[in-house]
Length: 281
Image (cartoon, rainbow, N blue to C red; front, side):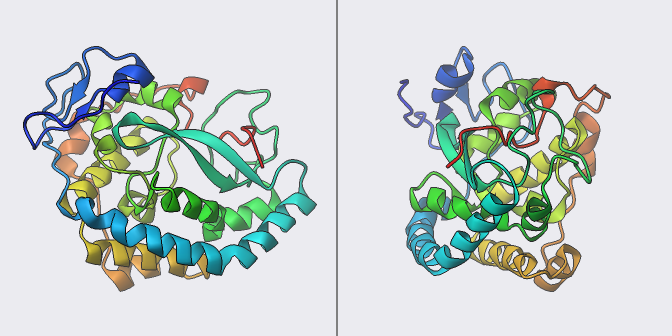
């Protein structure tokens, strides 16, 4: 495994692990002196240095408190559709480090058996009846408290993506790897403000909000983002929570013009839908 040490310049983050995962040469740096460059200078705020000391104890408390609810959800998933209640899938974390992420299964167990990975669409027929409610209320994300407790994820941050999808997105979205400067999150500014990805254009827009979060993150912003997600879990609309907590964000117009917006077919390598046929528990 490659050595993931900081660059001699404290403002640069060396992502040598990306060479191991994606077979890139030379290793990436956040001065963008590499194959994939961007004009956005990503410098995570100092808040990220002590953020884990707050999140992991909170994750432990919430995991214990929500364990009865998670048990009930698991039983409902098992009783209403064939397959495991929880599925495990490899995602990409900070510095490109792979980790196993957990979610309640919301799709049929054979969702991608015939098509391979495909775009997730509105009113997707692969989503189960229970899964529809889990997704609407974001309850399918609850098992990720375990990932936060282990230090693999944060409560707030860019959403973790599959390694095989990242290898495609780095060619489509300028500076896409910038989001790996911090741990991925259970929720985030992009998830709160924008709908699920269905195209490369959607990924470009969320990328802009992910970079904004990395450059402006603080405790007050995290608390509001977590509160917005919690309110959605009890059925309060996303639009209401955004206005109430002043979390309205929009992608930067200037940057939206410079990202590639060409239309492409939703082939399997571009998929962003969760592969529900992954290993389950």
